[in-house]
Length: 367
Picture 1: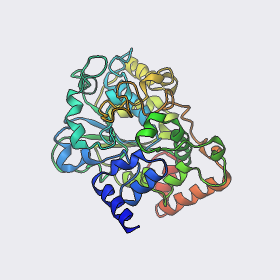
Picture 2: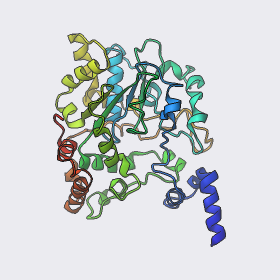
Picture 3: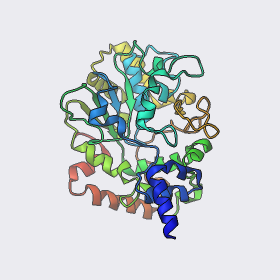
């Protein structure tokens, strides 16, 4: 037994990616018990203070929305704003991860930021174009990058260096939990195989069970991914008035899309005339995005796991899974009342010391 423990500890320290060749949930149990965070394909290294200035430019935007809180929505919308709606055929947006890269994402089992960094610049895609032509196109007034992190992992108040802007967005927690439950099952089999069976497929009958489904358990304060929602809200709340931060609530954006397109454009210092505003608003709508399911699969062109992942064809999620109805306030109808009550209590435990933050996280509005 001692020998097995020593072996597992050694693998966890020197080659933890080997765990992903094991079946679920053993793969995840060994990953977590050897001291690694979840989800296993997130990494914050690109955002370290001594690293960020080596690859970012003045004026770059980090769309650091909460998980299942409108990330793809905001990536596509900010692209529309920077092009003023002129990329009508989405030629500069072949896939969300190609036009608006995700530096947080570990694209291979043994991937690191140091290993992936230079390949952002010299990877040639299956269409013959350099990937950089899409995310660092000279026609763009700024580049857009995705993140699910919050300060301090994101150095929002870094002294000196590149002038970077951060767009963050919070969503009602039970709506996030409902969306995350669907999202677990929306991943492709290829992606699950890459990461030791995670995230697991959640059976439909588990959605309404009196016990929280796996995705909700993972996100609750005692779960391995509590930072995904509870940590995210608390961290960004402290930065809501910083001049290089635009913190919004998903419910407010859905209620007044045109008003928030104007607000985002002002934050990004993009002047939109009335015609441009109308075009961009229409293209930012969920209705328009649902017509473009092939744009939001999330490719991983830097993957090196031959035989497990096809970097040209495979995507993280199933076609059409990233743009659903995006409804507001419908999450609680998905779950058993006991699960809704458990989530409500968790919100009060985590946010109750600050009633303003608690109310805003749930409902949006002014802060």
